[in-house]
Image (spheres, rainbow, N blue to C red):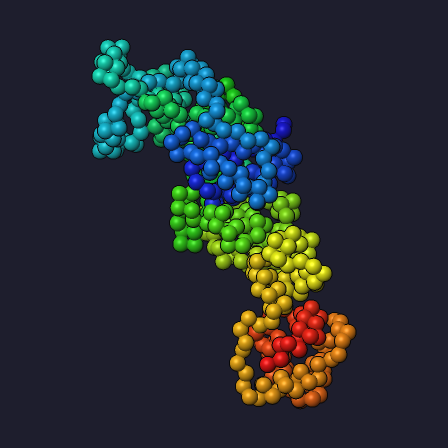
Length: 457
């Protein structure tokens, strides 16, 4: 069997880190099984779906390293859904209902007062032709419900029926269909709700595994029943835990919380985002992977916790720093050029400063210090000023190499008697204007003797 997965967001906003978690779970699963990844846009809500959001989602996925094998739009497939509707009607499992929202709400309240579950009572199945004609004469248009399967010959008295599946993430799962209302598949205006197009597309596109958030567990029971009503074998389902904010709130495309776009604009590396999105809330150690192939090797759907996982953006910076500190120059070269960092010094500069960066863009500040000197001249005590005067008097002559810092500080120690912090801190402040940073032994050869001497207070 060829493994085929899909990521199927609605293009109604920018995707956030929780959506990316689902996309990456599917992508890594496909990588590990040499399968196909379909990007499907569930855009049947014509009013809210926008092509600009679909394009932005594809851009975000590409930034993360996810490149679909195919891209599909549900809005271009209505004829396929229409044909499925006719099949379900012919099979007697899609029936017309004429209740208004107010009538349905009243029935739910009545059922609650009687101690019954507030599910739809299938009253529409008992409508006579005269009642239907009367509704139609009043201008009512039907919505269409899918008749969930049961084991009784009387559809008005459904017995307990359960759907079971072995979940790729959660293990054995069960949904009791008797606790659910027959779902509406088609609205009064003829538009489709999520369930029917999703199942029809999974059948038509040969989707073998559906991996998504655990807020869809109950939906899965209904969808398995619908697969069988359409004479199709259900795919393997897997439901991963959801991500929340640190305060426990859910993520939403509408609010833009932790959107991929905002994380990218904050200078976070895609592999920092991918590593945390995939590994948080699992039994795996959360550490930055250098590419998706490495992350795939650490990915196991069954290692995912059943409880929600809190996504802390501060952890992104920890992972981001780890990626910066080990990024080879070849991985940074093109982006450094865009920032104006190029030439013969670019590579030794990168190797010198990468261990002190939170984001790649932070290299610009150090490049400016290297080329122009400290941006803010520090204030020195009289003792430190005298010390620096003596220090610069013994500055070694050219040519300079990697040993110049050791030679210079050795001469300073002999001339002044200073050592430790009392020696190194004034020098660091004079050379960079900052109390911490890259090793001065690495920076000094890049400054050159003339550039170093220009930093004398």
